[in-house]
Length: 182
Image 1 (cartoon, rainbow, N blue to C red):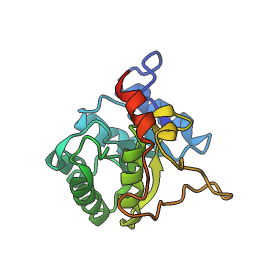
Image 2: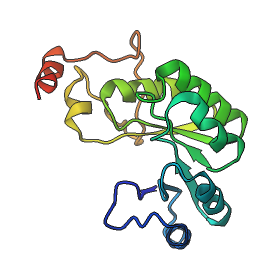
Image 3: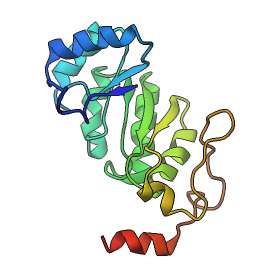
Image 4: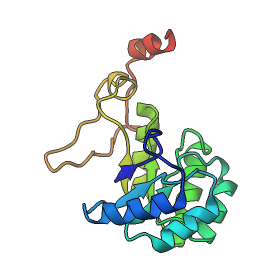
């Protein structure tokens, strides 16, 4: 995947640029192109999705389940990326995920927040047939350092879903306190 949203120096926020870039990305076997346009440009995303040879993704900046409806019902994306720490947590993430699932849209939860968010994304994603991946950043102190047992990819490159009670993780309280003082 290529995420243009975090690259302001190269992100032109322009439909023609996004279409041209998506065609170039196809040559490199990129699976999806994320945040290629302004996160509120529904019409632009619809046009980009129609013209792009790679999947188009967005959704990390959307809030509330209702803001996802036009993106889903108007087929503006191939990949929807709700962030459960900002879209209403587990219940809303599940509702958004099932709605996308029912409409043939892949869900990739956006876990660029904390270890708690990544754990929530893994648990919710595991319950959806249209959720294959979770996007998260590693190594990152606010994810890796606040867990007693940090997330670790297995030998095949998969991130195992924690199977302990709750979200399956145990927070390192001292590490959380250190981050809270910053």
